[in-house]
Amino acid sequence: MTSLSTAPTVHVTLSEMEWETALLHRKIGRVEGADAIVDASDGVETIEAVERHALVSGFSLLVSRVAIDRTAAVWSLERSGFVTADVGLTFEYDRATLPAVRPARDSGPAIVRAATDDDLPALHELVGGLFLHSYYYAGALFSRAEADLLYRAWVTNSVHGRADRVLLVTRGHEVLGFITCRVAADRTGIIELVGVDRRHGSQGLGKALVLAALHCFHELHAATVRVRTQASNLAAARLYGATGARLVSVDTTLLKSLSGRRS
Picture 1 (tube, helix red, strand yellow):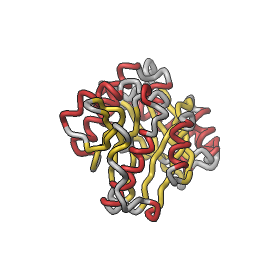
Picture 2 (cartoon, one colour):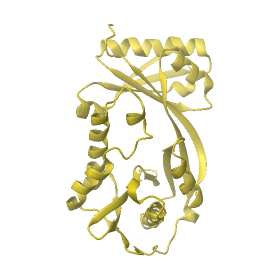
Picture 3 (cartoon, rainbow, N blue to C red):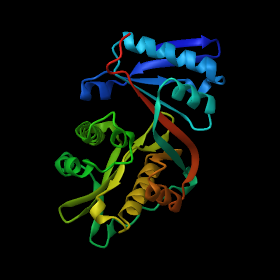
């Protein structure tokens, strides 16, 4: 990780997004700390210094996520050539709202259960093109094949231990949807991925998965539970609100391609 600054109170860091870099075979960097920018002119100077270092270091793409109300940071990034790729909403469930009683495992013919390695082929088929609101799919800086590859690897890693549990909703032998449950070191429960086959939407399967995940987090002694979705994903936002979550933050993700540029 490299730290650069043009003012003593602003330290912007550049680090390699190792997982994405390894999968896509191009060096992708994360720019952090831009939230601290309070003056757009100084901010542009700082961001451009980061970019110069990124070019020398062989990065092909930069990603920065900042709180949407940090206007000086957003302007600095935009004036430096970054483009908005995603607006995110983060919802939080309080510990008191996590259900101690296990939700019914059966929802008509659908069953919620834990995922195993045997479910990975079905999950790989399900996630391909499922998360179309994310910046991997929405923008022009990742191909459809790259986005599919990233999500298939993500769900594989989740089943293999990145998540504490991965829950499925199934009907017969068919996997209709899934949700991941991970508890961070500070005891915050994090739902990273949740998706339902679009052919089976509006059947209450998403709600069944969220309620099962909240019970899972209760068992794992999570202090709170957080989940982030895109502002354009209105169905997900409504689902989290309807299951007891409150909106706690809004952010924006900005990207800049460095491909074809010279240091």
